[in-house]
Length: 387
Ligand SMILES: *[C@@H]1O[C@H](CO)[C@@H](O)[C@H](O)[C@H]1NC(C)=O
Ligand SMILES: *[C@@H]1O[C@H](CO)[C@@H](O)[C@H](O)[C@H]1NC(C)=O
Image (spheres, rainbow, N blue to C red):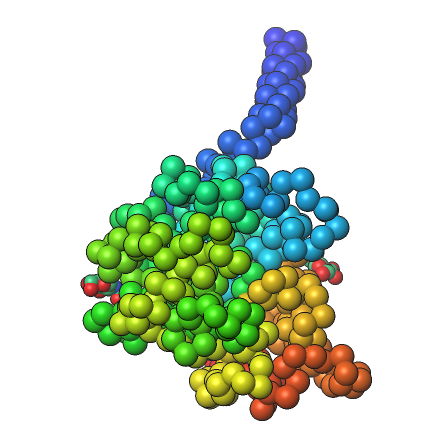
């Protein structure tokens, strides 16, 4: 009789120890599986409003192309940079959106890459993390044409195969991994209504495109940037985009690969393109003096900012760089409120103004540049405060 409590304690102790060992080894050896299970569970929870929403698609590769055997200090090929940018896209999306759920398709070169990317945001507070519904898709490399896989960042070609790789989807918003939001992601879906009955791709101009190679065939007036594309996949499947594109490739890789080929294709099929203002893909080159004034950026604010060619990390435009830095800081643990985030952005602008204007670079001459950057954030804050 007296022994029983000890026996119980012993059994209990053994169970705890065993559970701990099993748990530990499970955690140590199967971190990946645990994480995958969590993601699967999450996907089951996705309710109808999410699945009926047009998803945002990102493509990120770690182990192909010039990520392999690279100079670790080179920011252009840095994997750490990719992961930081990944956190910043989604932090900016969550801070400036009122949606309770956002659907994202993530195409990666492996499950490991997928898990590693999602682990960069796994420490965020659950109520924020849960708003993002990720779906993993493989990059179907067998679809690539000979040579594409050997080219500079073959992962970049994936966006041209989205109509086939996402065969169950009617439409998607494709985004490069070096973009961030300055306003609500929910503003993006309205673009599809602007596209009319024929256009299959909506994209913004890139001012450097023709300057860099003035004999290039350019879609629209200046050539388009493929970093943010509103794609009607149904229409793109009808015209077999990927197959048709290849007719516009010359054998030695074009300097901008997929972007060159898409520009050439759309130049000869202009009805398929709906040109967007820079508000949806604001690049450093959107600040060039020859660039058209982005009235929508003035009236409504820049919505998506694109740090193309690592420009969030280089001295291209000091304000773009500052915005990225501030968002990166808040993305570490998500402890700042929207108010605090906006305050930090405003303080960053004030600081840059106090410093020598020589260090502002590309966009300093833009009319009401600060307003273009902050319009969405300020009005979101104002509407929050007035509630
Ligand atoms: C895409 O195009 C198809 C065919 O024209 C159309 O039925 C569908 O509504 C379009 N999708 C969107 C999101 O506009
Ligand atoms: C969040 O990170 C910032 C640094 O970016 C730090 O100052 C702050 O103490 C952290 N907050 C929490 C709750 O960990």
